[in-house]
Image 1 (cartoon, rainbow, N blue to C red):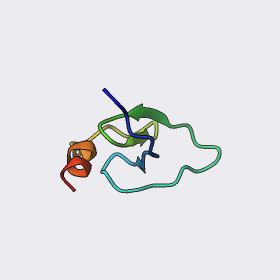
Image 2: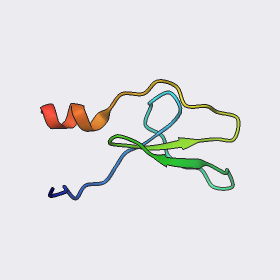
Image 3: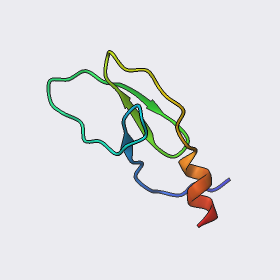
Length: 57
């Protein structure tokens, strides 16, 4: 199956786009179409499948 070369957006625990900050430790997870960046005190909330949304467009 061919893959598309593209950059994945980095989102926070609530699905909002975020920029990583220096001197903060993140737990990074690659999800369906994005990179989830969680701070130590955060948990993942229900996030959309961005790959499915991208394929529909």
